[in-house]
Image 1 (cartoon, protein in one colour):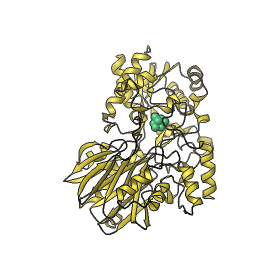
Image 2 (cartoon, rainbow, N blue to C red):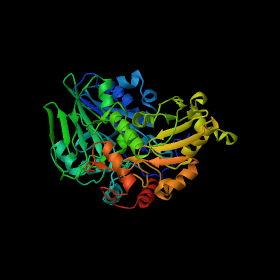
Image 3 (cartoon, rainbow, N blue to C red):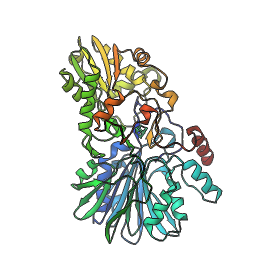
Image 4 (tube, helix red, strand yellow):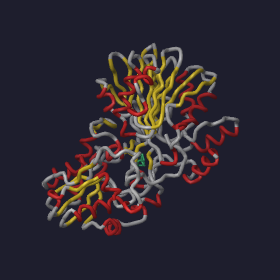
Amino acid sequence: MLTFKKMHPRPLEDDHFHDQCGLFGVFGHPEAAHLAYMGLYALQHRGQESAGIAAGDGKRLCLEKGMGLVNDVFTESRLEALPGDRAIGHVRYSTSGDTLVTNAQPYLIECHRGPIAVGHNGNLVNAAILRQELEAAGSIFQSTSDTEVILHLYARSHRERLEDAIAASLSKVMGAFSLVFLTPEALVAARDPWGFRPLVLGRLDGAAVVASETCALDLIDAEYVRDIEPGEVLVADAGGIRSFKPFPPEPAAHCVFEHVYFARPDSLVFGRTVLDSRLRLGVELAREAPVAADVVVPVPDSGMGAALGFARGSGLPFEWGLIRNHYVGRTFIQPRQGQRSLGVKIKLNPVRQVIEGRRVVLIDDSIVRGTTSRKIVRMVREAGAREVHIRISSPPTIGPCYYGIDTPLKSELIASSHSTEEIRRFIEADSLAYLSHEGLLKAVGDPAGRRHCTACFSGRYPVAVAVPDESQIRLFEKARA
Ligand code: SF4
């Protein structure tokens, strides 16, 4: 789910691409809202700005949502206000300009078909055009989100059956969507025909469970059944589970960045264990870009899996040379002007005993703007490193994502306009190497590159954006004014 607002740098030196949403759904369990709460808790890494749960008892739907972490938004009494055996939940990440509770999901609307709630992970590339058409036809939008377009299309559908109306509205949208819908009678899960974002089906005590990642199933002791397939619409209601594929098939385009960085390492994503992918990324990187060094140090937490793989592949020792403070929240008071250099230090602290006098290989998943990498290199040098070598477990990120990932503008991506040698000089490293495109695909088990989207590395976008990004932003800022 993308809102149409210009991207801004993250606070506290957070220089990564970010997933924008996590989804959960359950049908047929007496503890539905509590399970949704637990599921969202496990998916918190996919979105930290808002959290919400819609629940139903067969007659009505109730919604609780707010700004903040799952634990901040939900209290016992808020969960008690969510009765019934069916629920959907959503966690959202957003850019700093979009801190509006109206953009928090799930959305719950009432239309001539009755109430319906929806949670979305992904981004629709033709939402701006559809919104323009809908507004011209009299639709009134309450948020700046592309997800609302789906609800307006659904409300306008004349199809009788719920799943047919949902399928008809989704057949008009283009781009990335993993979705959970809830009506008083049914839970519906849907995934776009390219399968950009993950969505899995699980089972718990006879209840159907869906989630963005299997780590949510693990926490509630649900059994993983299978992935919801690209282009599949799955319905769980009193009649059981049924599914169909209403959209024309498209070539698979699973987001490879889920394996590089977004997904939790303990999850199974697109049928593969994420930790295994990250280890292989590191092994490939060591094979492609070896370096004479004394110690392999991960940039925590993002470089952990690849650093273990690099150590395995290179035979160099792996050591904890940087320690991360996990308790830095987004509400931390920003350092004063004179303390700006504290930015990275608040998050990371070098271990002098590991680093001093040694040739250090630092492993990270990506370089976005380059400013954070430079600060980390300086920090490691100041801790006494003799040499600092940077190895990145993905190719240079040269373009933004249009499929549901929070990315800076292309002009802000250092690799979009600088060579590897220029970036090395900018970040002040003794050497810098990225994993190749071939190495990336090999590590995720897709050497022919037939199943994954790699657009932010290759510039080859599987689905064209219907209008230029800047036009989308202008259109929606106008709509919001
Ligand atoms: S452009 Fe990059 S981040 Fe976006 S879906 Fe493709 S691989 Fe993932």
